[in-house]
Image (cartoon, rainbow, N blue to C red; front, side, top):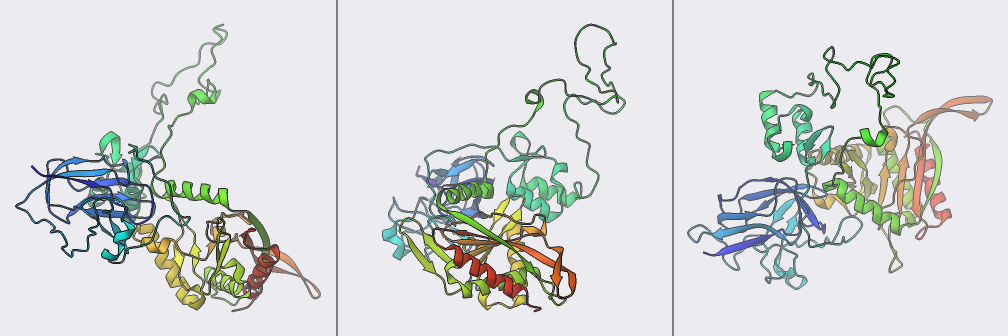
Length: 467
């Protein structure tokens, strides 16, 4: 019997691990070469990993929700010589390097797995088509370990499910809180969501069952009664004078919940933010952009993008990358803007490429496309890094000014707050003008205060124009 152990390949992002979303096979099943083996969630996408051989599945590296470290066992097979196998040197798009360097790469959003998994050897890159040089996330390489951490699906609102399953529920219009869970330990699976969508049993907006906490009786049924006054027992009543349950113990005793391991996007966000905090020397300038002269039909995001381009042309020092270790600076002739997109699963920052060449309509179309791809988790990994400056339009929710985080190697991020009207002095009196609060955070290692102020001034001047 010939067996083959398949190690989790590097899925092309330089991240140290990935989370099992769903196995397409179980132990004992037979699988064909290149059939989908397992769905894995990384910090940026959910991808299908194909089988490197044809044969019987002997072992799998973990169940749904388990975190598997890159380079450790994902599955083990008994090879079936009567079924199609990959010949050595066969041009299939799979990478075949030295045994220690055999691995995988990503072409756009397609995973190409090798027989051995692991990391691509640099000496064998000439044998691999379109090998991506991506050794990390948007902040560079991350450290790896040799452990496999078994984790439960994230529990939010009492429902255990992976972020990818929640995204599927949103896409299908399913209220995940009302889906019947069939996974281990009450975890809602992809199939559970699909079943609920098919039978219409958990449509969003339908009345949900009332959830009662432990010890809270249903209305009119066996509610505890306070002890008779003057009993002398010293016990506090569990009911208020209005007849409602009261806390009778310290908050620490009554608090519920348990620690949850971060996964996927939130796991990566924690790493990125910690790395940025340890490296950058941030300073923030704030001002209000007067948009009173705007003609009807102006798109706020489009105007902000145009203003950033104007600032980058006036002061190239902020449209740049900075290497703090080598103390080198790279000024970019083009403007690729990272647009922060908030989701339930965490923060995504897709890149709006060539913003300096787009008109207002093209900007809106590109932003809508990126947002849709983020929400559907179909955005190519190549679109989540490599931007030259960032924009956070948090004002669409709330807030006036901010100190947003700069993610290396970029050196600046613009944050736009919630627009408001203010009284502005004009010739002969005062007028009510609409303004947009702007905050420009820059890395003071790479930019001077004067450069940042001139960049912000260029933005304010551009935003003040009617069109």
